[in-house]
Image 1 (tube, one colour):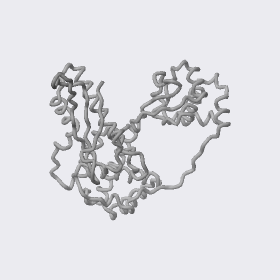
Image 2 (image 1 turned 120 degrees about the vertical axis):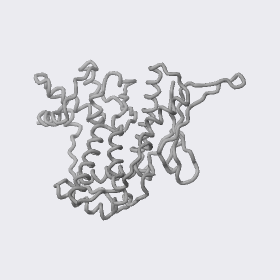
Image 3 (image 1 turned 90 degrees about the horizontal axis):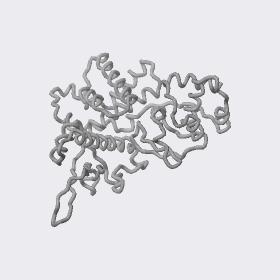
Image 4 (image 1 turned 180 degrees about the horizontal axis):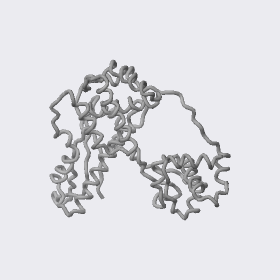
Length: 332
């Protein structure tokens, strides 16, 4: 069975690039013994070895490296791309070798390196457009990326300027925050835009496209505001569970989906992907869409009863907007 595992190029020191080994079954005989020949392929990812879990082949999940969810998600994306590429070649009947696989991987991962951006005035915006186009993130995340790109383009038009990597400094940060506030964005929305900008800058930095580190300074922070977290207690959830909605199918389905979400903690984007195939040994096993991580969730008795009620063939999840509208009516 094919597999991908990541390793550090330089385990010693303060910075190391990352490569992976793709085992796909290729081998040769040496002195009568079978010797496997995995493909070794270098990525653009870089990490401090102190934050690396060599046993798992991923970043440690520690507070000293708060970027670990996004970092590991990128590694998971690379793994998925490599395995999907391998699967496609096998289905197409291609004779596999390290040279063939390396050529295919280069065609996927080195597209941006093969592009020449002649105008340094446009390099930032060109990179962002390319990054969005080639991103494997969820539709929701890419929507945030596109909204940020639009805001940057609006900023350029209003200020009659062209943004470059070096222009993204503290002075720009202050002006851009005021610009976003002038559009009546909430502090949390402004914060999301700044977070996305920092993502763009970090991705470009890891590709050696700039050396501007102002975006990592404390003053270049994500504005936030206090929000009220509304929650239901156990007795309220049980009251909703016991509610007789047999005469209203849409309310009945929304109530069931809501309770599954409440007792599993799954995001809305994962609820619609839940099926009988995800139920194993008294637990829910699913690869989450946002983080691309496999999670195992103990099967709560209420969730189990809802699944049995539908014979493990859950109704189709409606739009988030309709879901929120109906669940409020159910709660009333």
